[in-house]
Amino acid sequence: MRILCAKQALVDAVNNVQRAVASKSALPALEGVLLKTGDNSLFLAGYDMELGITTTIEAQVKEAGEIVLNAKLFLEIIRKLPSDEVLIQCNDKNNTTIKSGSSEFTIIGFSSADYPELPTINGGAAITMQQNVLKSMIRQTLFAVAQNDTRPVHTGVKFEIDSAILRLIAVDGSRLALRSEPIKSNESLNFVVPGKTLGEVLKLLNEEDEPLYMTVGARHIILEIGGYSVFSRLLDGEFLPYRKAIPANATTTVRIKTRELIDAVDRASLVINDRLKSPLICRFKDDQISLSCITALGSANDVIDAKIEGQQEEMGFNSRFLLEALRNTECDEVVIELSGTQSPMKIVPTSGDGFLFLVLPVRLKRV
Image 1 (cartoon, rainbow, N blue to C red):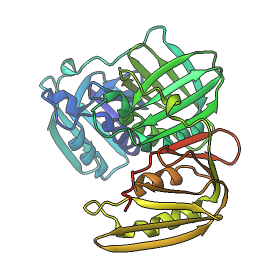
Image 2: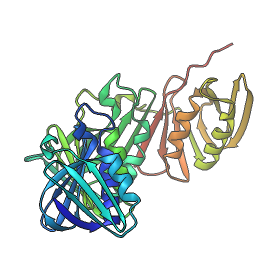
Image 3: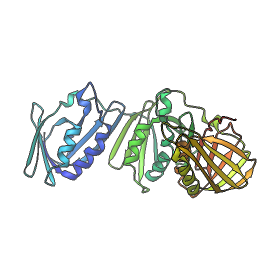
Image 4: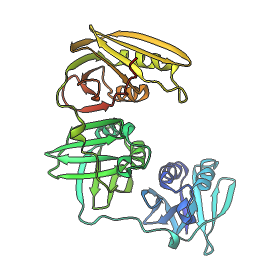
């Protein structure tokens, strides 16, 4: 193989595809990026057997071929090359030379025969939507994905398509995030995408209304985003029947300015840390929310105004979970619905049903 390509295009491509490369693997090729020549192009891929990212950049192909190069070393080298163009050539023994300006490196590659075959989907369901919409939906649900694998299916986000509505749902045992958007699709689908995959997808999506394309198969999903393809396995297992977890009726309704409540929770949480965990006590009474917390570090109290209808309540919450839910509402005002001290707090927009967050209360010790 012998190719010439633009340095910045190569750096950008390797930087993105290497996110899917295994950090440690019994198969050394999985720690590398696959380079494969095409028609005046260079195909690049990273794949750890669960997540894969591929792209193609322009290149002058002087001699066709393919090679696998250690992703970390390759990226560090090309980032620091002095010239705007990069020459890459390898011989039959997989010795690869990288030249740019006055700099020259020779590194040992791996045969592409050792690289696993990338997954394909035949006859899957096709979905098209705007990049900025999916970016918002992922951002507003990913925070609630479970971080342990007690139930592996909950380490992902459930995609639910029905009646031209796409819903993304994440749960971790203490909270729930649900985000809904209308979508142009006649499909009826349910599948769960790993949180790791969506974290990488989030980095590739932009804030514009450019289209992206999803193909969903029985075991895998492929997302086409700009010039990149993201491949991922889907998670198996029975997802929480989340609709049963959502309280049907509220006994207390609170309308609050989101930033004011975020700031108050943030202040009251200063006496809480990872070693000194204590519930944040919230009292909803007389058009005010009173927040208090006591730990070995000290105590904190704060009060903010709110519009409260219904019965007064006193409940305890994990302050971090409450903060993350409030921050991900991404709106100026929210409505909080309470259904008693044992039911989760429900956070919804002041109008519409674009999102719904649940935060389970912490049982308070009564003196």
